[in-house]
Length: 82
Length: 348
Image (cartoon, rainbow over all chains, first blue to last red; front, side, top):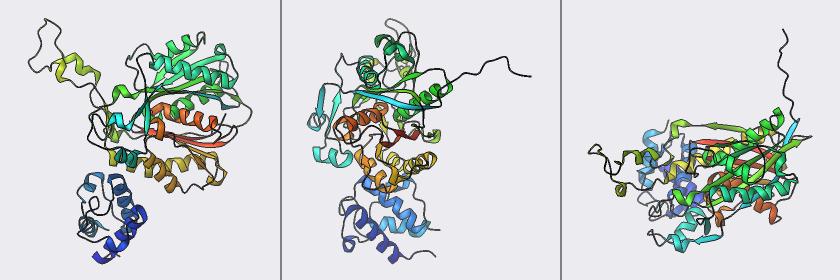
């Protein structure tokens, strides 16, 4: 069953917490992964791979660079999850 | 009808008998890299784990570094150079396509007339060479094989590219592969993914220089002048490489363990290609290696030396006592091609 927007944000928060050690409550839709959450380009790849597994979605390398904020990633997953 | 051809006769198994390394004398700290790029020591360390690397001087050529490393490997193996039946050199930074640098190295170490050739398999080159060597020893074409991984990647580094200027280092690593009574080099899991050939590459082919008009000669208008051509460098798509290296290569590493019948708990040492500390850390996490496994982290002071990185790291682990002779080690190389090779070995 497809995840809702809330579930995706909560899931991303857990992933970002696991990978970058950022408190889950700081992970909000308007936050930038790089500027606000200290997720660098390599950690972003780990976040993406974890999100792919969790939400059963494929996020190709070419699309990763467009996912600037938690909201971008949430929208992408909402649109592409199977 | 029976064949008229006698079969060749090799050893039942092969093993790594000795290892040697050579690191150029000049140590280059991040501060020196920062003269050419807008970055910081902290940024470089956090993205790569690299603090220093060795860069070769004019006298430290691909051949001379290889001769030094080979001498140590031969002594470590307890054989003489004359016993070597084949010399395999993996490099991407020897700037003459022909003759192979392997022949010069074979001659300079006093090996007589062994088979000698170069291979090109990027950062997987050591594993490719090791696999060939194992085949030669068990098939009978050579009793002892010298396998060398050697690079002068400083020559292929774009000092003004902030994504790669700090990554690469120079050096040579060598092993002697010889006969064994029991398995000491497991099945190799290897392959290539040519659809990703653009992911890590040399920016220009050497033939770009052919477009330069000869002095006084006529040439097409579009020919670039020599000063317009930047010397070729290695470039990569960082995120794509990271994803492939961590997640796809962890699967290959697991396959190599399975093929050798070795569980992570039986493993003593993990020696991945020293590409980047972040890749190494994430691979260890993805593979769920137990804490008892010693992990090579030579990249911190050696940088990424491509084909040389695994034997260099192996030598250092043994020399510092972090690993010991007889330990079971998983080695995996991966890089431009994309190509990869993983196997489980008994350390010499």
